[in-house]
Each structure stands twice: as structure tokens, then as C-alpha cells.
Image (cartoon, rainbow, N blue to C red; front, top):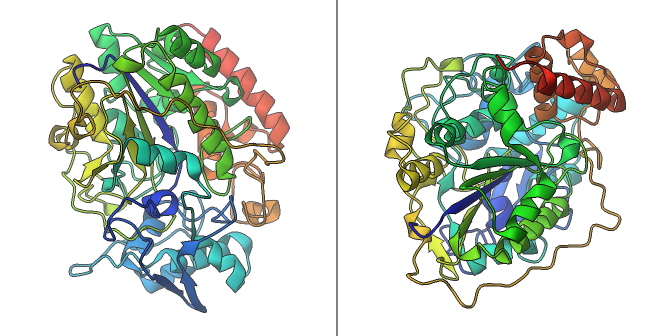
Length: 496
């Protein structure tokens, strides 16, 4: 690791290990699912976990918040009446305590994905799914249908027991990656605006305090970095303004060998041509971005001093067969919904790509997101642990198992064609509930093109610039203009 001066992270959205990498040919039977027969029961039948051919599956977006993930892990609703309730805390008639959390003695079955998908589908669409629609939660990808990520996992290192930090949705897991904690928050929006009062130090502020160069790269269509909206945006506007760059600059910095010490590369997750792997977006858009990133890094003059970590924030409701282990409690923060932050979330795809990584490396030890924070603290002498979670995390050193740079590293990987591929989230039936249904459930943003994460981001931006949430336009195109106007206002405002 001492040879690596440039660390790059690209974190995609909402896929489990089994969903994308479970059919890797060089895994043993315990870690993968190639030689397993897995049936997932739901009230009207069963779903078989098997290779599928729909690049948008699962459709619709499965439940990904705390209550839904508990059902997927433990295979039941607790109390049983929760099966008919809303899976997100922003809605009326939300799950009752203990939010499907296990009771003493409950063992994780990892067979609840179809049960939760069935009830989430009914809640979202107001009707019962057909058996064909249910099969969507059982369909997984293979090296043939997701060739980019599977090829890179075989060419470099793959972690077969990398778990997200929390059994819940996006923002808590991303903030754990950055900070080693989420301050007790268990939902994307339980406290509406992270950006307003989330003051924990992060990997970004550690690099800033040390005076080391770092950059956040985003597509201009994305308008604003997601990281800046969840990490004390109001306090750190100057930091974000001076370090956020267009995605084109990433490819330029690779080409010139002038990458900073730490690069955070964000896919498009909200506006523009979405390429974050988030279901039900067509995964070929994420595959295309990953290929472009790899090619730029591999052909950079700084290649021999560079490492790329490819990671997913959380499982997003996709099936995985490995139970999450116990986790160190990060700090004294009181956990929302009674959660003690004492267990990890679902396994996610994770790989390290570097010239010091032997082809076909499989790392079977337990890893989790704060391993990167721990590694950065030690590699760059950034100071003590931020929480007990990153203090206990392992280092990424097993991925750097060669003494000299490889001479056989893959020169280039061909991105998939995107001709005719729909690059929006609204790609097929059931992407999001009908507008009338959202409105009936008390949805703040009545729009069938914006994801749960997108709604949270837009609302966070409203709070950050001091605008009422009620003023957010409901029309998607008008909303994009509204976001751009307020991002411009945010960037133009004096630093607090």
C-alpha cells in the first residue's frame, strides 16, 4: 500500500453481492450461488434465484430501508401486522416498532427477499404482483450479463464478505463510509436534512486538515455532489466548492497523471443519464461508466501509483444468501428505531484494482466500508480513529499482494453499447408508484421519475438553501431547473 499515492473510490448504488457477482467462476460454493438451488417463499408461491435476462431487474425498486432489510434477513414481519404497512418512515402508516427487528433467539434465514418484495410491490402499486413480476426479485446477473464488473473481479481482487455498515438504505451507509458513524440515524430522511446539522468529521475533512489534495468528481447533469448534501453542507460550503469538479476533469487528471491523493467519483444518481446500477435502471449504464473509469485509470501515467476501489453503498433489497455478522457499536449516538448499530448490513460487491494486485485474488475475510477510512488514516497519517467502527476495521492490505507492479494487467475493457438503452429510472412497469398513489400516501414529491434517494436529496437541498419543501416543483423538468437555480445560489452565497 505504501506504493500507492492516488486512491480512487467509485461507489455505486443498491446491488448485493449475489445479484452481480454470485456467479463468478473462481468462487467457492459457499461464497457464490452458481451451484446452489435457492427458493424464496412469498404468500402465493415461491421464486427461484437464477440468472435472468432483464437488465433492469429487479422491478420495481425493492424495499431498502431498515424495516424492509430486517424482513429480508430474518424472513418475517415483527409484528405480523407490519406486512400491510408503509416501508419508509416518510409515509403515514409506517411500520410499527420494533420495525421487523429480530427477537431474542431469531436466526437470520436470508430468505425473506421475496416476502418483502411481494408486500412492497402491493404497497407501491396497490395490487398483487403476478408470478412473472415476482420472478424479478430472484433474477441475478452473471459474467455474461454483467461482463464489466465480473471481468474486473476476476482480473484483480474481489472481497466475498464485504458488508455494508448498516442494514438499511443509502445515506446511513454512505455516511458510515465517510465518517465511521451516521450519528444514530437509520433512515435516509428520519431527520430530514443531514446537510444542515451533520457535523461529524469525515475522510474528506481529514484530507483537508492534513493539507493533502482531494477531489469530488460529478457529472454536471448531477447538479451537486450527493456527498456534500449529507456531510454538513451548510458548514463546509467552501470546502465543497473548491474541491468539486466536473467528471471530464477526472478523465483529464487520469490522462495527465495529476490525480489527487484521494478521488471520490460519483455516478449520476438523480439527474442526467443515470449510471449508478440502482434498480431498476439498466445496469449497462453503470457497466459503461465502470469500463470508462477503469480504462482511464489503467492507461494513466500514474497507473503504477494508483488504486481503484469499486464498491456499492448497500444491497438495495436485492437477494443475498450470506447473513451479516455482528458489528462494533461505533459511538454513543442513540439509534433511531431502537437500533443499536451492532450488526452489519447485506454483502455488497467490492474490489480493489491496482498494479500490485494479483489476478484472481479472492479475499474471504470480513470487510466493511470503514476499512477504507482505516486504510487512509494509516497510509497518510491522518490521525486517530473517528469511531470504534473504523478503529476495529481491517486494512485493505490483502488486496496488495505483489511486490512489483504487474506486467499482465488488462490494458483496456470494452464498454457495452448503450444504443437504445433507456438511461432514466423510469424504464419499465412499477419503477415507482403512480402519481395518484404517491399523493394518496402523503408523498411530498409527486413524480414518477424520481427515486426515493432523489426525493431525499432534493428536500435536503431545499433545507440547505432555506426554501420550504412545499415550494419544490412536482413536475420533473421544472424540478431540475429549480435544483440548478438553488445550486447556483448555494455556490454564490458567502461562506459561513
